[in-house]
Amino acid sequence: MEPHPDASLGHRPEPGDGFTPVRPPRRSARRRAVILATCLFAVGATAVTVDRVAASRVESRTAEAFQQGMGTPARPSVEVRGFPVLPQLSSGTLRHVDITARDIPARGSDRPVPVTRLTVGLDELRTSGDADQVHARAVDATAFLSYEDLSDALGLAIEGDGETGRVRARLVLPLSGEVTVSTAVAAASGNRVAFTDFSVTQGELPAAGRVLLAKLLAEPIQLRNVPEGLLLRSVTAEAGGLNAHFTGDTVTFRPAAATV
Image (cartoon, rainbow, N blue to C red; front, side, top):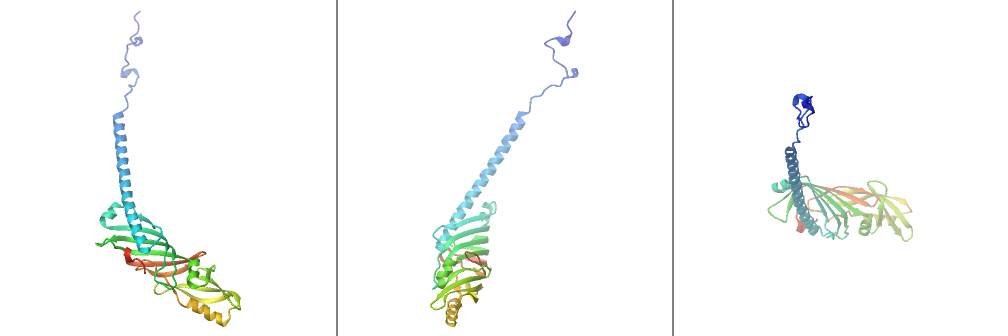
């Protein structure tokens, strides 16, 4: 008997025999997609790197200029906000820049109060034709003044009072011993910190002592080591010192003469 054709080893199933031919995967299409995705990722990563390098250069130059103007022992930290930065540089205006400087020395004052930490936020920072000047549409800054530096300036031991707007002052009198008073702190005109409304909280303060204390606290402390164009708006007390809040509109920053 002749063997059935299907039993032949050389038989190739036809589509009608119930078999589905296996097609090889379309590797070329997938390969092209992978290559395209890799290229796009590489281009994006390169753009981010170039943008970050440009931002770092701006931050470095700004930190150097601020350090020269404020006379800080260490270079301030500077961060340019917003991505990408290159279009901002091309337009000549940076949307927002944050600066943090520490240990700013006091200048031109008979009762100098160094600024322990100064944080500055600048909106719409742009350069002028003069490379030594930059302009900001709006500035918001906070200067932290330590109680240790305030004590040196006032000749009194100043510490926190547990209230937002008050501090304690301790003084030692020849006959009365140690006396502690609570005094309010507030912003005064001309970027000055005023001490007012003091009351005795511990010990006895004779009339002569009141006169002495009133004399020590009568003259507000002038803050001269802040960027020019800023106005003191408020003063609050914390555990370690005072926070002096400043704002300014259309402020011009000149590295060679940055402080007032």
